[in-house]
Length: 74
Image (cartoon, rainbow, N blue to C red; front, side, top):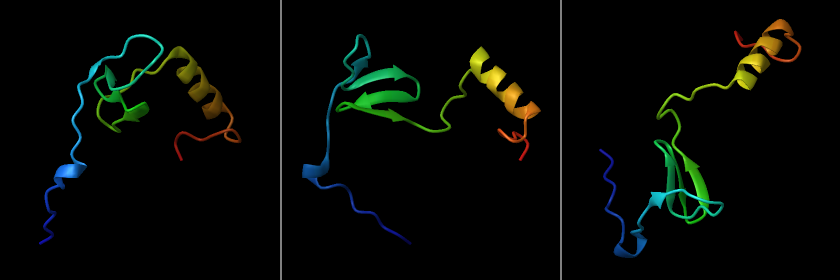
């Protein structure tokens, strides 16, 4: 059994997050799976489904018609 020791006291971080508003994003939350921490954007994968845009649907349609560009069923 693998035992992972607790983090050292010096390794612990504590920050307050606010909702992201404006052009500067530091320690703020964008939505349910995206936030900014110390100026780095972090997105948690497979957390919530994303709505695709019309542009995404058109790109998928084009690539399905042209296998040389991409193949969604591969």
